[in-house]
Image 1 (cartoon, one colour):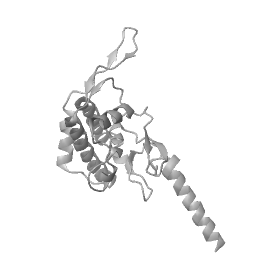
Image 2 (cartoon, rainbow, N blue to C red; image 1 turned 90 degrees about the horizontal axis):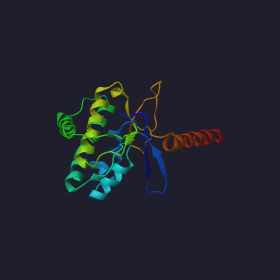
Image 3 (cartoon, rainbow, N blue to C red; image 1 turned 180 degrees about the vertical axis):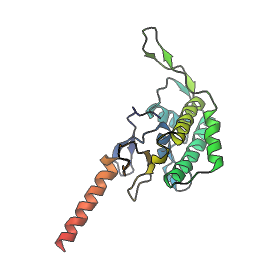
Image 4 (cartoon, one colour; image 1 turned 90 degrees about the vertical axis):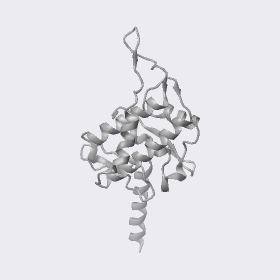
Length: 199
């Protein structure tokens, strides 16, 4: 998990957008679509789509070679992560096949960081989609076995299914983003109080 990341900018069909930081690299893959009800949000159709997600995610990568096999592998890992995070958010163990999918992805070598002659971090070495997915899967292993494993949450808004890690001190975060779902809930609550007071 990377606590220093800023998250992704999510774009909605209504034309709005907001920044979403799920608190972990592995959870940044989930908004790209999924199986079942999430299929209508699918954005990983071509190698260019996966390359775009890689460029936007919190992982620091250089040039990444992406092909159709990489797209299929990303979708397989993402779908397994959806099921595992949903199970964990409900206090359930998750399916062995989904853990196996994460472990398969994690088995590949991750991207290689580099240091320059000035002692600063250098441009990462060219890598592959498989290496990036390995980093995503390894982040999932760290999340599911680490101190925040029981703090995987689903946004409390009735029309949002984004998952995040609640790293707040009290552990009572309810919304994927106060900028979007938190504010919408506040507006609904205010309107309900106002309409109740008028009646």
